[in-house]
Image (cartoon, rainbow, N blue to C red):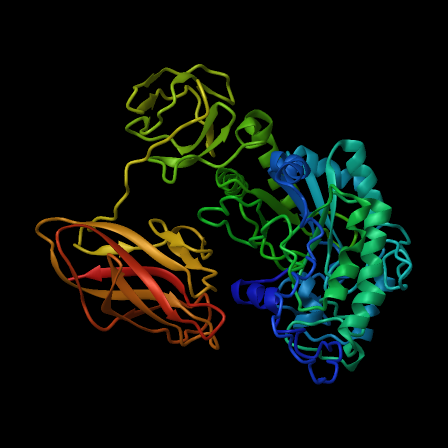
Length: 606
């Protein structure tokens, strides 16, 4: 897994085959044949997407269980659990599973960990029971991470937990069987190209040991593709979770997807790339502000700061935070794939188990507001909480009950009844044909989220009043991530004071705010920008538009210390705002680096 914003997107592109990874030879140029007098358009090359010919009905049927599930467990377990984030007394500053890469450990030295790996406390039924008690509906487990160590019985070579350790068992087979017995779907993660052990495997930033040098195409056809075949034909996983897109030849991709034919119901994510879109988008460590409308998506996230076990990382997210993450993700139409990192003995750390149990306790009472739900019909709610929909029911998860009472506007569908899900209490309500709904407060409020069921006469139809940013108490217009309309694929990341618009990798993406200027506040405004930009990605140019027209306000993005290092800069020029409604848009003009910038706020002041 990637560790942060720039790494993730560098890994999803990885610049050709990654520095030092090797590539297929380019054939010598040949003299092209003479062109015919009336050339025909070349035929469309055959799609590399194994589901290219699938109908919408077929896709909906294949994705049905996954869309119903909403909550799954990610398990990162491998040889990296042995050092647990510390190598020869030196702790790694990065994630536990990246220790070989980050500390540049030689291949032979790292492989010497295998004889020490004997997780006698591993019990598949216990792990699956933990997931089931948490309310999770599926599990995705690392079959091979970037370290190249197989966590299953592979015939490809002996670098595996079955053949290379005293344990000599097949955890993937045992987890698959345990999931089947307990009624959960089981999937596998497989790092298809980035492999720091096998010759020819790719490595982010380049190789550090000559033993890694070789040809990527040979690696794919002799290591990766045969292992993918083993996984798909022996274990028949419901999900195949690729990681790290690397440029490959069409033959490479075909060899990796050849055995999709073994199970037409297989779901695969979007990280194979190379013309294969995959079935699911995979935002990592953040929740996209608006989800991915029209697409299936899944936020993968750690409970602490690392995917693989790291003994020094005890900064665990709280149970309430994780639960509200799940509710937030469901309200945007996505799934939550929450990670655990078992230690080298085969035990999931107790703080992670406790947090999962906390979520499960709430879901046992209130799960109908999450499972099988679709995204909220509201863009913004007038209270601290989230909404989901299922059939003719609108679910409201209220984090903090409003002191002035719970009130919604714009709900055009007749309300038949309202109740608190956790207690079954029927609640008083008043619904007006203009769409106004008021709901009485339940006797018992949940400290994390009070789930409310609003039963409707039909599917909910919502008409929201237009939202516009107004001047704050100091007379400024503060345009930030909570009020932005993103025209494109950039995403809001973080929350609270850390929220910002990131993943702004497409020059065509624009950020837009609707504002309202009172009669007494018209005139010229200066602009200040709070932003960050990783060194090497600087140089993007942009302008600020008012009602679709360029203004003198804009500039060139300078580098900051990192994507997390936010700086404030006053932009040149002024823009004129007359009293009344306006649309303010930040429009990139060029983008020479990885991304335009991360934007925390654009403030307009006199």
